[in-house]
Image (tube, rainbow, N blue to C red; front, side):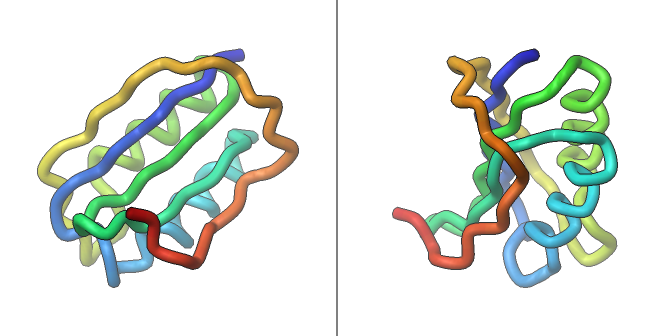
Length: 93
């Protein structure tokens, strides 16, 4: 199990990025959350095995159809023990 902090930049808000990320995470068994940032990026904290996290990262490189991903930044962090994957509705600063 690993914990990743993922920032996705580009045209990634208003294109169903968060909902699609949740669908992918639920499908592969990733736990954590996704939210929009004030700067227009999307932020994900994700926990899972290598295969599940790689699958989520593959999605993050492309995003949903309407997205235009310019950059994906990934940092490893400490496990937090999330119990599910949530879409956080409020914009974070």
